[in-house]
Length: 365
Image (tube, rainbow, N blue to C red):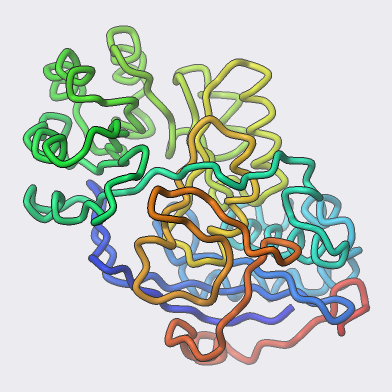
């Protein structure tokens, strides 16, 4: 395993009801076997919730090197089962390793990741396009010049900010997916629920704080549009406890702790008739390419993070002017790093001591 640091920036500063993020910093995990590399990344995001400060991520990743070194590179699901108890409180580190190990296994097999996972071919699936929180005129300006995207995911500071939707509606006929990022009040949402269908709102995501189950249940009873979970249902345990409170779940690979548990959640949703979205965190082409390979499993796709980036770690999955997914044609996730990109930051040794390369399964190329 080798660790790298990456720093990416968006074309516009990313804002939600919770925070503003001027740059995205991440630990990139590279696992190698038999001359192939698999890639995963863990961003520094919501650090108090996900234990994701860079130094913490690096320390925890280094702490499982000896376990990783004895794992079979062709059996990433078993690797996850060994690592999960060690990284249960650090899901981004676990998720980045799981993504990298799945990517490596698919590359060793010479096939795309989706094929190895038994997922449908995601080619042609369409992603939503996200519009970060800002002044209304600035949010309208964030609509891409090509307005052919089939859905726009709109961050709103509070549920009553419908003037933003009216301005956006003048520019596009596509439906809106509203994201409250756990920052709304029930009274504000209740006051505007009746207007949402006429504005073309397709769904609401995580309107209330994680602990406000009462507000969620009350809103679901009267809402004319489905309400999806994000922060309330991030892993298998939370899925069992709270998924029934929502109409759908936005599954994010890193919050779940990797591809392995994400697939379990998606399959459980399908069995129970719960709608699904597949989303991303502030990730580069590393994470977005991995997520894209699972997108054939879901009802809605939100992997537009690469369309928002001004700098990237390399190339992988592509999105055309209408958000349609195109794969690179390479095995695994198809990610190919660009060593010349300014997204590659300082060596991890500048954060915590020296990083030691450890072979995976004893067959480091």
